[in-house]
Amino acid sequence: QVQLVESGGGLVRPGGSLRLSCLVSGISLSANAMGWYRQAPGTKRELVAAMTGGTSTNYTDSVKGRFTISRDNAKNTIYLEMNRLKPEDTAVYYCNIESAYSGMDYWGKGTLVTVSS
Image 1 (cartoon, rainbow, N blue to C red):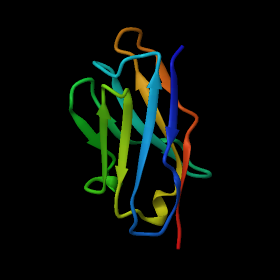
Image 2: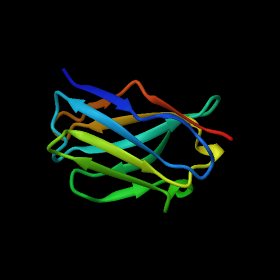
Image 3: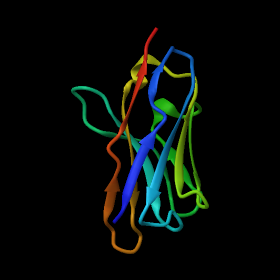
């Protein structure tokens, strides 16, 4: 059974930093594409950062230069380092992994990030 559990969200002031973690079980990170998405109230879920099964990454324009996606295969954990946070980054953040073998998508339940003074 595949499970993704996010952590690291919370309340932070504008300009601050947070690191989100996504502990994955039941599937290896190797060779699988993964990503972080977010959904603010009243909006659609959007892709924030993605990483291929290799090391290629891409980011939505609004977070380029501020957010970094990474993974630790040994710990089976995906990270999202978020710097210079803005109020518009406030959202529930979800991690996702797509199995290269089955094509199935797996999601965590999300962690709330609130950027406010």
